[in-house]
Image (cartoon, rainbow, N blue to C red):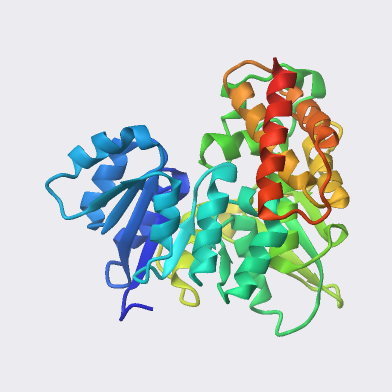
Length: 386
Ligand code: MG
């Protein structure tokens, strides 16, 4: 750890998680400094962030935008790089203490592995990394003594509850799900849903990919896979309960029937702040819960008839090996096509199921096999859309 301040690298600083992480850092200049910021394409915002936070290095993943970013920062001491390889090298730099993995999708895998190999604390928001390559990522983390701190609100909640477990074995994890914008819609109406409707999440303000995944419940399915890897529980002991209020962010159950829950207003700055300050809790600027004003909390069973993606994710873990990786790749292609209005809502699970049944199976995939599976699944998905 660099003396006094924690030095932060943010992979995906211009996205929803990245900007909220910077909001926490802005509130606590005595605790944090910014070593590295990276974005996929957003040059303007990245340059502005680099200036405000005095970042030492910035990386634009889209190499065609390197010139524009260089020019935008020409009068600053900030060093400008482009491409994933630069990003992998820079996250491993000695000056970095904590890497926030907030890239979207499979693209976060390589830089996350690079950070773990260098023994960095990884605050992980990019769940697709664990869905696609959970065995490799967790093995890499333990081999290099690199802690993974969950930023996903459900997993952060579980992590916070586990601090009170005092060594007792967890019987079950209860992952809460908001149910998304179509929770109360009948199947026929959901079938005709548009991207604009799916993007209107009732409780959380998030990026487009995760918001669509929330509307299909694929996000919750991925979170089951994420929980399996982070907490080492088999999927039959990870249960999903729909909780439309989004106040309880998840629960753990013990053998005596006790449930521990973590509650807070739905605001990602809580889990982000918890990961950045751990083990300290930081003021995040978020609203505090008013339980009396809230009055009641609600729970219901998830409906896998109307939301088949949740069942697909459980099926993918059951098959194991590279199948969750194929599911993730197919879903990325399907979500993009849905956002572009090229396929319907229920084409997303249809496409995912077709693809993960079509890829070559590998029981214990190497990193190369994970990349091969990802490419094969994307190609199969694209063919089916055509
Ligand atoms: Mg979540």
